[in-house]
Length: 224
Image 1 (cartoon, rainbow, N blue to C red):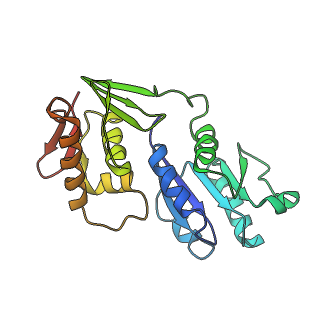
Image 2: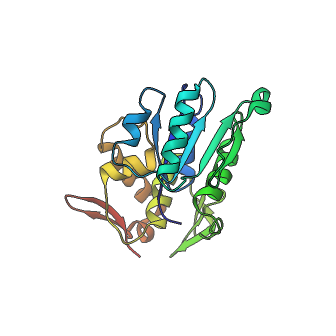
């Protein structure tokens, strides 16, 4: 699986927390738009691999604009978010590979639905278990073990470590790590990356820490 870009179009913020968690669970970046900013988002030069469209509060004009956008770009897959009581009025795009999901769905269900649309046929490509020296990472359960003993990592420490381990031998800037690991709405400074790297190194021990290499003037990479 390689990195994908998602455009979320929503009139509310009700999906934002789940989208942040989704960006931690799978290898995606998520851009936000509403009815007023949709045209700006699609003309920004970014290429999107999936559109998540929250139907709540959306007028016919924006729905037609989304239809035109996905058609003009090779029928980008659309995941339509609908409230349970409005399922009888569900309006699915007529072309392309699309799906729908209830607005109350969990992050886990969003992960499954998005994975099926973004990586068809590759859903189980990455192994759930990653081993480096005396460290084992279970990507399915978010657990890290050193010499078969669990390591007490915070969610962000785990997310940073697992991202670097699953993207080895490539240097990532602090800004990129903030975007890829902390998510689309993180507004803190790049110093937080250094702090988390230091904490991860101290918790995983010197053998694994030696794989986390500082690239002066750039950022970090995980060397195999």
